Length: 279
Image 1: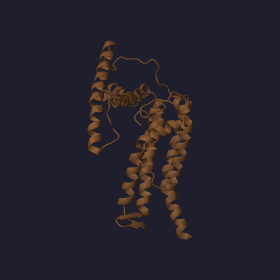
Image 2: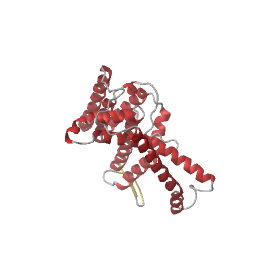
Image 3: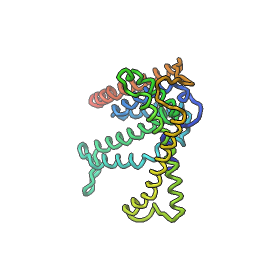
Image 4: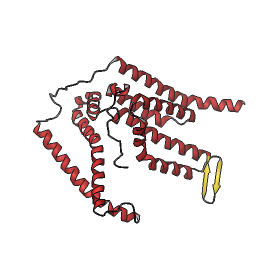
């Protein structure tokens, strides 16, 4: 699973979203992040699913890449669903056996919370990591928050730190896989035994991983110092960001879709309730 992790990996393909300005994608990501946590109606969730499917095909990353993005968080999503399913006992009772009680409100909340997590991971991957290189994410953050330089906030340095952190996620996952394979070839076992035994076994992975991470950080610092890096003052860019008409069109279309999503969540539920009461 660690070797298949796609979080932080850039999918080098050509698509509409790959060519879209990273600042537009970052703004759209924030908009859909808010929309995901505002949606509660089942019809609005279906609309969000359709929008997500459209984004997946527009990104041209492939369903396999999306599945590898979702796969690591599936245990957490299942855990969240079960917690909400068995702990919320208000509403109409659907099933009851001994200490287990399932209600309609618990079931709807469980589906909602699980779907929110899955949508959040997919939207994050599509708008940011899979279709945008870490360098472009850094440039877009620096451009969007450039006004904070007046307040003497080190925007360039903060954007670069976030870009480096995203870049090193797949590197560290590959390093973890290599260390685990090397330790298993020496007789280490991570799949059998009790919980505490497995935790102690992972110490043989964490120690060399920390050492390797510190060595990589030191090598990166030495490389930046050798290239006379002194922050963002006076630096120019080889490929400065420029917003095109197509970028504006993508931003407007998906912003309107997010607005329709929120409006549908607010008003469709009321309309359905009124119709059912009349019928």
